[in-house]
Amino acid sequence: MERTIYITEDDLTNIRRALQDPEYNNLRNRPYIQQLNRELERAVICPSSAIPPDAITMDSRVVLLDLESGEEMDLTLVYPGKPQGTAAGEPVSVLAPIGIAMLGYRAGDVFAWETPGGVRQLKVKSVLYQPESAARDGQA
Image (cartoon, rainbow, N blue to C red; front, side):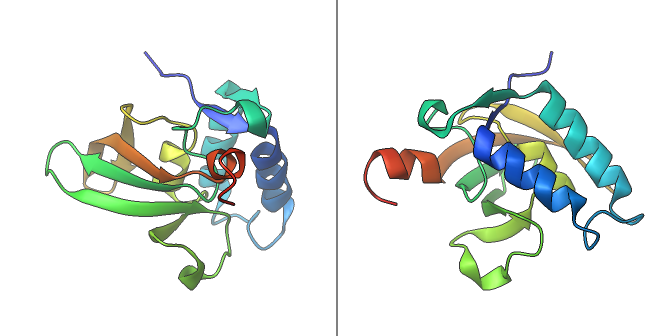
């Protein structure tokens, strides 16, 4: 059973805008764009003020745990083309397979990430930073 994923209205608009950019909307990215669109279609769309504080939104910094290897990854979900040095965690594009997989999940959720070596099960260990939550707390 698929878990519910959450996306802000602003993120949805900005992702769709980015997907129309010819730099990213090309044959090489087509399978990723199709996969991302499937995720967007099943997502619960929320205003920024109503997004759960532990949901992975754009520019969120998270710690993911690989349930097989025990490896932890500190990642920040970014828009395609965002400069690599701007995020605290390792930047990962929303067009990358792991970026598509993690978008919208919440702390405690487990999701599958398809890699060339097979499917890996990842758990959202924590959301270290989420821009919407930071804005509500006056930290943005």
